[in-house]
Length: 119
Image 1: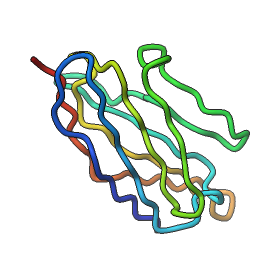
Image 2 (image 1 turned 180 degrees about the horizontal axis):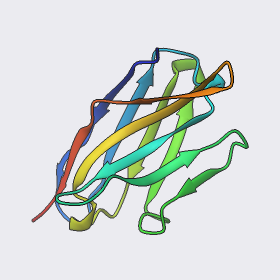
Image 3 (image 1 turned 90 degrees about the horizontal axis):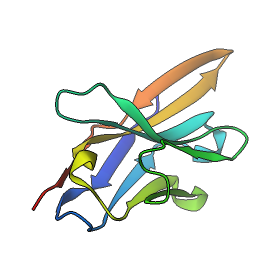
């Protein structure tokens, strides 16, 4: 069982910046997948950014050039830096991880953090 604990987020005006952190209860380098999803008002949960086993970070088209995902293996923590935020970015953001155990993928989610972009 992997626990993901998120922090950060909050409220910001359009054009502003916010950051999110996600600390894992296990060594993140051993996880198959880590990333961020978001769920906006009356919208389905969608991928924001993810890193797979190849080490390449993939971003949703809507956040490319504005959001940056990074990680600190020593702290077992990943981050999402969000710049030039838009009202459309308003959502609950979830940290996500997949752990491969005996050929089975186990998915884990953080508790979610609210990000609100409004004037």
